Amino acid sequence: MASTPGVLDLSGNNIGGNVPNEFRKGCRLEMLDLCRNFLQGQIPRSLVNCKNLKLLDLENNQLKDTFPCELSALSQLQVLVLKSNKFGGRIACPGEDSIWPLLQILNLASNRFSGEITSQFIPTRRSMMAGTKEMQLETDELKYSSTLAGLGIGNVADLTLTKINYA
Image (cartoon, rainbow, N blue to C red):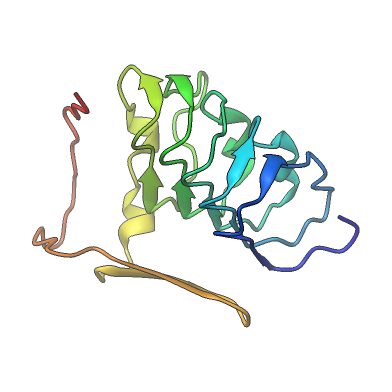
């Protein structure tokens, strides 16, 4: 990928095979949406070169991997969707107190993860300071919006997540 666009949306195109591990230094991607395809293999670790990546949506593919701790260097990441794949193993990144400081949406449903979600994945106050129930990511080419319906929690100073049971 010699020259990369800010947005790459290939969702719902019935694409198969592996995602190429070809994201080079200087990658300008802000949004990568590969959901609803037939992709296999692992998340390309070269995505760490896309320092401005805000959205990574890999929902509803056949990816088989562990939790992508190598991508913790993506400090601008706001949305990570890994739902409905074949991810497995523990949901933890050893040695990391907090990753993705701007993360607002983390969807790991319908996978084979084990263990507990640690506090390193709980959104920080900084990422929630927008004060609205809607999160928006915009570029010239694409607008991504997610509304948090029925959130009546007011101005939360401290949010504690005690247990999530997917059984």
